[in-house]
Image 1 (spheres, rainbow, N blue to C red):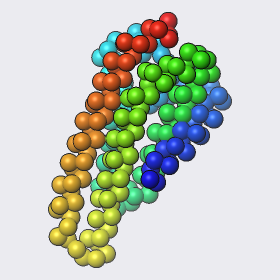
Image 2 (image 1 turned 90 degrees about the horizontal axis):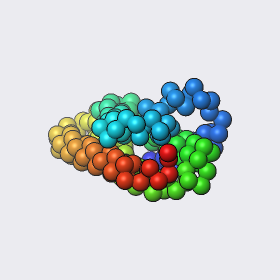
Image 3 (image 1 turned 60 degrees about the vertical axis):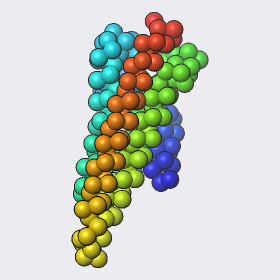
Length: 185
């Protein structure tokens, strides 16, 4: 619940912040957020897939690495907030640049993949929190028996989250090339 709320807070902050972004900053943020639609359309299906999966993979990998660190528990909410912020910036940018067409583009083309990925991210963040808590239990309670099972669970959850990220990227590419020509020329 914490990560979902943090993600939603980032989404709201990003949508409010998007109107004040300069063009140079928007181009720099294109790797993490959907900003340059015509460029992504010209990059082809493989380029669109790589951009989508690469962005998702960075967030899943960051959550995974935080789960392997005792201090990672402090960074997990920031990962959720930053991803939500990016989603909000993308939505605000599409609305301010393309108007009503941008809203429909976001709802029909981007939102399905975003929902699948956000589910994967929240699952990864919660399993990373679980792993951090187990490692802290080993340190403070000297209960080493449960860490082996927790590690296996954590690795399985990460694999599931990566598969969900892959599926969200495939969904993004399919919707981009099936519907984006209707909205963006």
